[in-house]
Length: 410
Image (cartoon, rainbow, N blue to C red; front, top):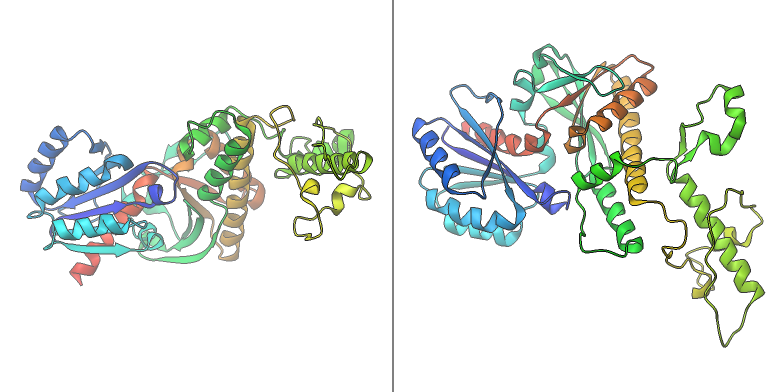
């Protein structure tokens, strides 16, 4: 079989995180000693301590990550060990220059490039290692190890740049893609950074990656950005048997505020129109009053070629009611989980599946796990069991390694 290195560039290429994840699988004691020496000497190669057991018998496994700024250094360093590295499997769109460098430094090494989606479906080690799949026990996000070998046919939901849904058959011998959704981590990161670029005066920390967004979300609330049931029905919620804090529309409150602001701008311009000296519309504060459908703000369309620039929405200033970045992050994560769990429940129900396994960096956050359990119980009416996967960042790197091994063995 030889020695195989799997490398996942997807987190850096998708701007989700500034790290590259690496899985090394080998079957030689000589490699073990050399690898320990390398780790001790090179601080840019950060080991990840795990008890994962390789899916392939007689093999050993180590996981690492390298910061994006150190990738070029790591590749040149790897070239010194080309005599023992027999196969390198890449996924996640590595740069052309990096691939060229790798090929020139390791001419005798077999280099594979795989689709990231394919590698996600092939990481058997993460599913067969004892204790790597965890049960979501309740809506508090409590986790307990479970025996993954007891999982029957189940749905695997991978939350990455997008969200993909796979059926995994008994004992994980086969995986089949059912569908995907573009509302994934890339959408969350892109929207949050656009929000900061428009409204934050301090932009030195851009771009903000997913872990920081999750941290902001844990400090925020959805009430500022999302339209709740109580915003629609007011005090009548109790008589209707509806919880007032239930989200009725993601970012509905912001949309209503934007329309109110546009209406106020158009009205202000119509009352104070001067062709030679146009004045910028005055700032307005948030209002809880509903905007009538007859309001001119509803008739301003972004594709109206006859509309002047003065009628187009202008960037909001800090004095206007801009939601805190913590609340915006909270609503983004909430939107991601609502969309993901609803699709998961629909796919699982359509194929008669009772177990759903979620994987992705977002599930390192306990609050996100509690959201998942809460919404899965809601969509499935309590008929489905939810699980999360440990070490999700390494799924594609492991999958790339194991996929390369399987192809070479054929």
